[in-house]
Image 1 (cartoon, helix red, strand yellow):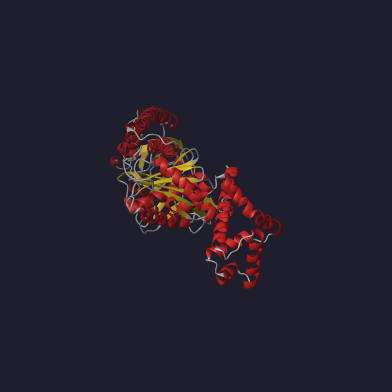
Image 2 (image 1 turned 45 degrees about the vertical axis):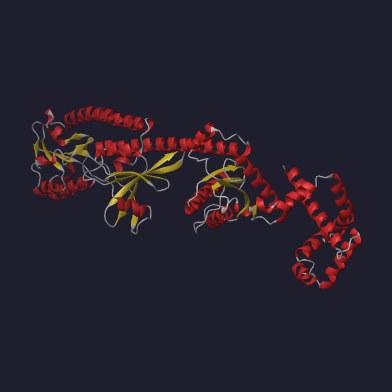
Length: 564
């Protein structure tokens, strides 16, 4: 694309002009503008410009004229035209040789040919060519957009770029995954993405004719070769990168514009891809929440919906619910220098958790289905009845190890259930896992793993606690003890719980509570006095233990209800 020097020298106005350099240069040089420039050249010459001069500033000074020609050549001009017959009579051989060496067309124009006439005809020809070029480039732009709208992507976009420009080009997404490559050096991509050892440096892009009209271009120089990069943006967010290589000619307006259109088409593709992905995630979330919470009958329609979303509901699954907490001091942090990431939003937290859950499931070769419900993560992990505990521990070990490396201050408490044979019992497993999580908070510190199968005693106690006579007995047994604790902060209830934990061993209890032996014995006597029960009598001890456990259980249940 572009007007070639051959077309220009064949214009009627230049019929009397004489070409001083090889005719082979005429087809390789394109012209985008024409101007009259006299010495000094400075930065007045644009890339691919046909420069006219009378040599008035270098009259009778061949060295000055030679310097002028070198300055024009260094500016990236396509051709030089000298008017001879007034200030210049013959063009020095060194200038002809310099132009030939640098592939610059050199034209001798008789003095009687007016520069105004030359400029008028050349600009008219450029205008016609530019309109045709614009129509051509607009057609390519529309073709690229149609590719995306019709379901194609980066592969088809880069194919169009290479077809019409012969520029090697590649596209990678923000995760540095190469989506398409047409004849671009993969070695350079790997070095830029730090997947291969190699040095490179960023340098300014100096082809000035495009700096004001095109997207910012980054240029990278390697030990062998160089390339350029355009950033793909949408909604002010980076979506990926378009890389292109140097070719054996200067980049033209059409080249750069086609590359820009490729960036726009890629931005549209990534927006479309993200929208599809977000829709799919939302559909999966809603499906799994319905499966877990509503107890929908597992009929053929539901199984088919699961298959369409990539889920095999016919397998056996254990349900795992994780309650995710972060330390407050971490909430506002951003990525650290050592690569650890402290999340700044629920979306970013969930992204990392989801990624590590998927990675852990892949590591142990198990299917998994994951969704989020506020700060809780719900996982249905493929397992079997006999080894689901071992599978769950292996899975959670992998998840927690990676998350602790990536997310500062994270703490997850887990409730786990495997209902029946694990097949078609998603709602039942979910409710049991919720129960396990709830009991875990009643008797463990955050970060626990509680299996529903380990809550038998607590479930029995909770059932007993609903009997009015039992409630009255617990209240009567502990009333004075609780009142005494509240007024004097004596911590007698906790003392009894630790004493019971160590099987009534006074020495071990005293060490665990960091108390003097006599102080512990004084507390135990106070417990006996306030309850009217003897800690040496087996029936009294059982009644006190049962009362304390029921009171702790019902108190926690009441706190959970008020929090809800």
